[in-house]
Image 1 (cartoon, rainbow, N blue to C red):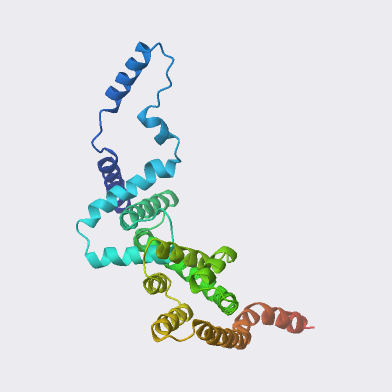
Image 2 (cartoon, rainbow, N blue to C red):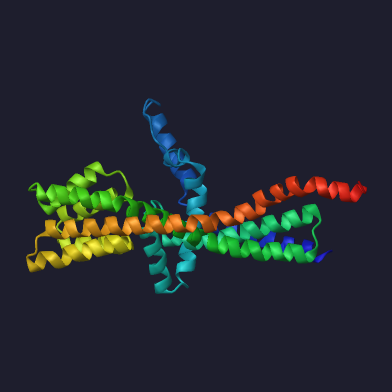
Length: 310
């Protein structure tokens, strides 16, 4: 028996054991309850429409019925041995990514299950295609690393994408806030105007902040919480300016106008920086794709003549 076969067998045994341990959770005597419900239905003449406990669950997608509970159960086991700081970090990433249906338990479960899946796939492919032991072990190590880092890296990618959308939408939102407040609207009404007209993640954040204010949370605390949920420098500067202006009695409309002009200036500087980086970024494709073709066209005939002795 080769070492690859031994490793593959061990991985399969571990995977089957984990799945059996998670899926085989204590039941609630479902079959007995169904029999009693059917007995009640027959006693009533069979005319009643009873909904069995599993009907609603079976109508859900496979991922919500099996995969998500599997991740959550594994995550609950891992949370007992996890540090509080790690759980808080995962929760912060979920909040910043604004992903529904995610929890720290699910992320911890994914960090356990996905490496097992990728390792099993690497061992299967290595055995099927006849790869050597070094290549198979390298694929196993890559599968462990990739499966372990995939849940967190995907969240970080969503956070960066969301922050870019917020940064792009912020200058227009600032202009709308400034115009609304100069027209006589209050800060809350101007924020409501932004939430109704803006379809970007920034508009959703303003709507969430308004909902917190309506539930009784002070406006300054709600704005600070929005800044913590969205670590964007421009948004943080805007919220700090508003938070400092209100207690001092400074006109918020004037502060918004200054912030809007500053955001326009920063956006212009970033566009100029991107324009200056473009020639440098275009150099590598030109070296790899265009210059070889030019050299082939120019020097090809001469090389052929030299090789043929013409």
